Length: 284
Image (tube, rainbow, N blue to C red; front, side, top):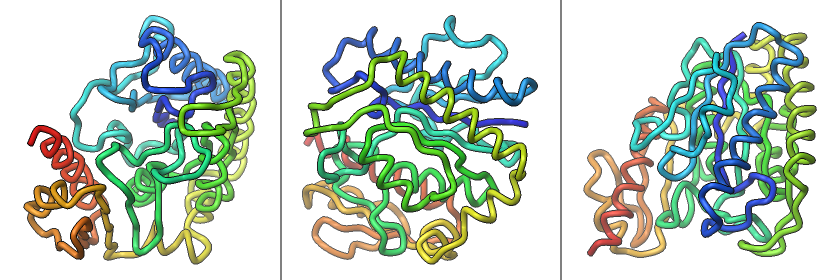
């Protein structure tokens, strides 16, 4: 089978803020990626694996520490951001080092893609990066089988994906403070959790898991409704001033912009354009 791993940073065990040393970040991020790969291959010896380096400038993974038969998507900007490299040939998605959306209480480095986005709603439901990424992947029939990150991330995203395996690596007491597992303890939990998720995939099959993923009112409204409307709320009106130039968008408030489409890729690109608008606004 073919597996897609998206690796972020803020939910990685041991990391507490964006100001931590780059080398330490890279080593801890890579360690959790390797643990996920080991978990997959402890069950599926022939697994083909694609890893999307998905934090910041997306050049975090230490390539010489990864198994040399995996493929890595790295560098930015790229059209599909955190899920670049996933396609219909992938049988399952795994998200490692993920975090809760902006505004979540007691969540590690909470944000939604960037600090220039205040909130994102999919058909009226507040969502985070996992849900937005999975709208795209669910359209391809790819189930999310595993998520790893801080406690509030797991609580939030498990509401949307009750059939996936989630593993908590740390418990935040504030945005930049937390109680955390040691690196090898985090990796052991990820390794075991991913192995369990892989067994479930191989036993029950991709199609069954992908269908179950859409069951439930919340799941259907967020992942399967078409056309779908995404609402982006910004921290300032000036960011929205710029983002409102995006063709097809509708300004629905001073700090709010909406976009409706039956194409998930189009919605995702709208969101990426909103992020670019926020970066432009910083230079004004």
